[in-house]
Amino acid sequence: MREILGRRRRHRPRRKGSPAQLDAALTCATAWKWPVLPGAGLATAGVRGERGRGCACPDPECAVPGAHPFDPGLLAATTDARMVRWWWTNRPTAPVVLATGGQAPCALSLPAVAGARALTALDAMGLRLGPVVATPTRWSLLVAPYTLERLGELLHAKDRVPSSLRFHGEGGYLILPPSEVGTGQVRWERAPMAGPAAPWLPDVESVLDALVEASNSAPGGGSRLAY
Image 1 (cartoon, helix red, strand yellow):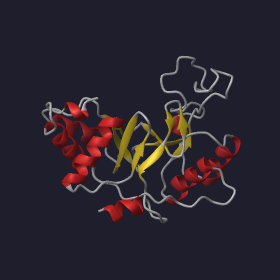
Image 2 (tube, helix red, strand yellow):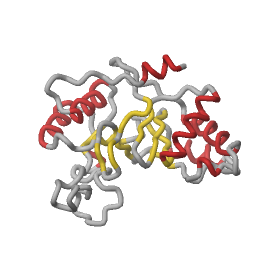
Image 3 (cartoon, one colour):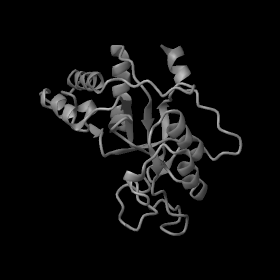
Image 4 (cartoon, rainbow, N blue to C red):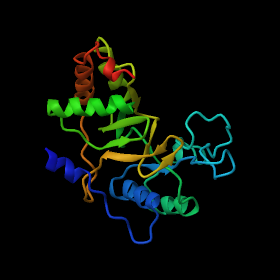
């Protein structure tokens, strides 16, 4: 198991002279056929605070600095290499935003501490996981595409699910590594395996079932996964 995880953590070599965000965006768009677009990003230092942690969007009270689409909007997400190169040539440090749903991956996310504990529980169950994206505040488990109708059916069948779970499906988005946003650096906790093939993704039902089981069996009635 450790050997498998070790292989997953290997990062794809960067193209010579290519900014990290551009390289990541091109891999998503051209190799994996995941539609991407640049995120709002962070304001430059001195514009909104000494450390420049405010969002580059016009909202001075932005709740998710840098970590959302702005211009272009989410509907502009594409797999076209020329458009991706143009975007990140003009904005080389822009976050990489994945438009979830459709033919693209979806995701389930948890607060960071709960996500780390959940992964330990899922590994103990022997569940095969796909890539996992981590930020200082939330961890996101990528899953195969699902529709909102199917998600509704799955949730309706459960007596309860962890209250901290969020679902990134059709019409949603997820910030991918190696982006930097207001909460800090975005990284792979479980990196996709090297190679041109799109990463393998588990079915949402298996991951949701395992998360619910891990939550319900946790001490305190599931509180470990609820914050």
